[in-house]
Length: 122
Image (cartoon, rainbow, N blue to C red; front, side, top):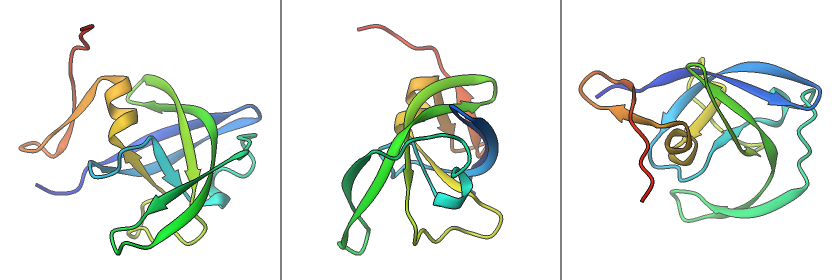
């Protein structure tokens, strides 16, 4: 399976932007990006949390809430900013499984794209 990259529209109180987001099924969260990608949107980064990198290193990151829209579906989620985030060429953000689940998507590994799934109440 190749990488799945989607257009993600991010909205804050003062505006919106479209980011090319790599779907990261190993990230249990909503969205990670660089501070410069959202600085004019009015997303208040009032909170901090510790995240652990694959190397085992723990880092403190800031986050705030904003709208995330993918393929016409919208959720409200945590927008984390990582100043030293290293992304592949042409990618602006990482989109995590929490946001995907809230919007009702899963990754179709055979097609290498997102697939809409029906949400169930349990």
